[in-house]
Length: 342
Image (tube, rainbow, N blue to C red; front, side, top):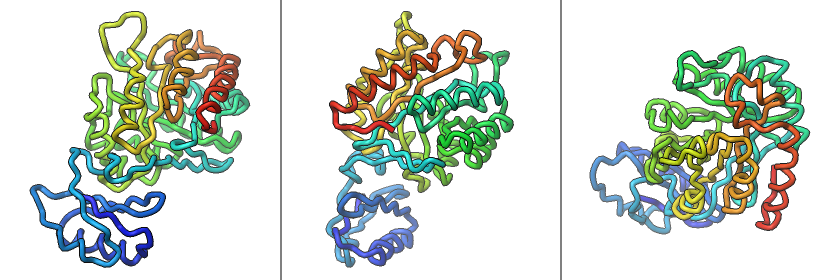
């Protein structure tokens, strides 16, 4: 069920409707739009007659929601949502007219390496930096990340270069630390359906970047985002990072068709990760250009100052020089679509 408020509804009227909903043992989710606030209702185990809400001050109408996801769909919010990320150099916005670029190494290897990457990524024009402190790897013998030490290194780089930090949490314990040190909590593909972790991210005070699972359908992807939003965190963005298919010429198959599919049914922004999506550095720039053209809201790019000697995913990391070229190409295509790059 969706309660649509009048354009001039006061905060008191919105709060009164939310309180009435919660008094019934349900959850109210007020989501402001460009012209009016909509209140999503979740928590009902069966049909509930909420027709009485129609008569409350400030209410326009109550609308049944037909999709299984109640909060991520355009029924609750027709206009695009914008992810807002505070950084030392000012807010970064992703979604709507704003195109965001997140760049950096796959993993934090040491302070010297990450600071070198931060300097070059910032010089290339990116204001958000990625890097893994916790690395879920296929092999238990691969580099697993520096943990808390890595988070502290990233926090130092944030202050030194004015970048926002995006990094992955792999369980509830690491999410507590990521929330403390980072600016955006990333939920990786392997954890897309880790529902307890999604709920914990939904109670966090930081934006969430949710990656698509390696075999997830569109509905499963959106329902994972619904888990986060159902706990009260509405600052969520999605990320397509490739799905597993029979193809053997790339690490994964980058499904760019999911971008317009998401935009058709959801108000959430969606980014594209061509680094994991292809697993080949030679394919990162072409697929980045294609992602911008197809309407993606941002890119997640792996950049390493010495890719051939990276401890993690060097074969899909591009050099800082190539990243600068990529940024120039992205700006040209984004301009054609009337989008600003930040």
